[in-house]
Image (cartoon, rainbow, N blue to C red):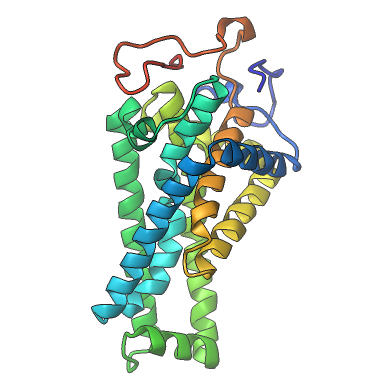
Length: 292
């Protein structure tokens, strides 16, 4: 992908830090990212399947554990929370795409330890996303309890009350509205922030700013991209998590290409080498990208 900077864009976002580094893309871009992600998936299939299988297994174990502990009322909110923490779960796939782009051979060690490239800020981002998910889960349970004060908090009761009663339809509308606010905020902050933190080793505040500018500058393409993410991941979850084996790494790869398409690494295209310059602090793969 070219790192040639585009002419200044007069959209009211120029005052934000590094706003000149964010490109404006077309509504076809999300499908281009998905195709590029699929190509990366095919090039690193064993590693991608292993990574996706790991998190699919963890998701299945959590769901089974909640059911066995009679905490089934948390299952549906946890599904929604999965979309909030998704960017943190796919950080290993960003590293795989980064290595493929540099002409390197991805390894399991580099994939699992990708977060070490910018450990403090990546861990901070992960903690914030986890906290955000926990708040969402708690709010969802409280809204259900207030809507149905005399219904037991079991998964079966929740399904019966929310899908087959007028009160349940109102609850779904309210829950969708509240969840939509959480999802929109999480997507705006996380669309390209974690790939940027991994690639450029920037702090979480700069990364979130970059992500927000990218989303607001490309509102329609990013809305399409959000819909693509929800569709692919929801399809994976609907197959008892089996589909996540493919869906999760695919979205991770595609998200890396979204970042590379939206963000200009350096205003001088001749200043960015084919491979990132070595950084002695990078003990896991011996390569590093330039900072901002």
